[in-house]
Length: 538
Image 1 (spheres, rainbow, N blue to C red):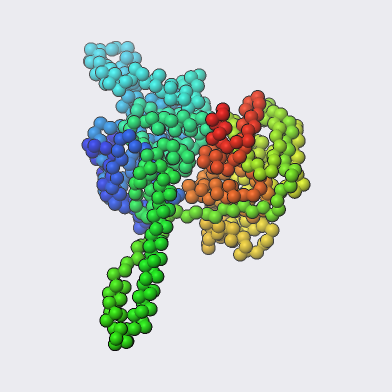
Image 2 (tube, rainbow, N blue to C red; image 1 turned 135 degrees about the vertical axis):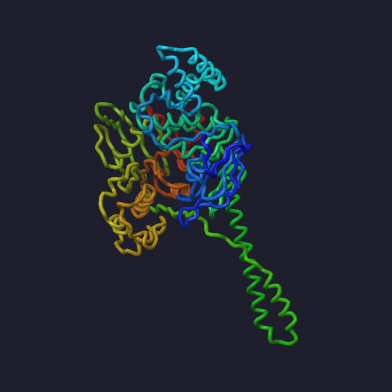
């Protein structure tokens, strides 16, 4: 690794000393002093924009800190999960994975070039011998088999290993880049959202890989279950600082909420004492017989200091889906539903009935199948055959995975949401936007400039306004930060109607669903149980 300003080779571990990052007047974080030690997995958390990805770039040497330095142990190899899925289009999958160990890959290519020379000289032989020695030290003879094992575990079969990257689908490129980052047992592993776009099997495999990994891991993820499974520590980016807590995500959340509660309660008691002393002083300071007591209380008052409770970067939206009416006994029946796309049968004879209080998670190895099923049930596309029968008391609303078609206009936010509201009053509509953190001038933004996460929050506002008693969610946590996911999770749990949903968020699926329908290629498995219970059965 090339040495950069603020980046030192030779420390005993990955270490930050006074690390600060500023962009103009804005300070992302300052004076960060952390020792990341071997054998630990650190979950890097914080609100969107807090600086998580920036901190990873500083640790990797991709970005220089404004102040301070990063040190890494001499001879230690640091590996990062690349984010550009199209950076290796002309390379084979196998080569891309082995590139994860830059030195090994360079040696392999140098060897190939020397041995391919038609006029192989004695000097070439000496160069090749040195390369072979280092190649052996780096376990180069096992490189292709090790890469193949990683690819197979991530669902990339051997038949694809020597294809060019440009020949494979985007979802498989993600897996190849993940395999690249894991290849060769790196000493320090930096992973930015490694579960994004992964199927459940791959996520489960990655969890077990990281649990068994003996070196240092620093991972950014919005998946709470994943963080709980793999993390030994949480590094929280907030208040312009990065503070490390022992334990997993749930332990951090409970302890941080308890600390905040205790600080507020302590301040409340101090405020009550201050008020009591001030009242006594005001009442008796002019009274000669009480003047000594009033003076004593003035001194006591001066000693009381309220604890400063800084405003967190974290903001939790308020999500509450309230149905206008209770659903009756007849809710939804799906009979022998079939749908083909471009001649390929995606849904075949899908049948099930929704009962009272059902919150059903639809899972499948084929995400196209779940999306098609939801679109048909929501009435957005037609089935080839089969029936969708709704109960007379049922009103439905739909959260689509791809919401772009809902924003093909140049309306401002408040006008966009007003079109879905029974009450056209602007104050009423703004109330729902405010719940989703669009307050003041934020509500006057054009929908054309919204980020992915902002669009998701808008669609959730639409669902809250609808008063529907049957909600359909296709991957609702995509693009959301941890705080919004937590709020959505609570909103779905509290909802008094029926829910049909799919999500890669394990914790949301486990805590919301009381029934699992698994869409398999040739059959359907339907169980009334939680997600974890289903995984144990299957």
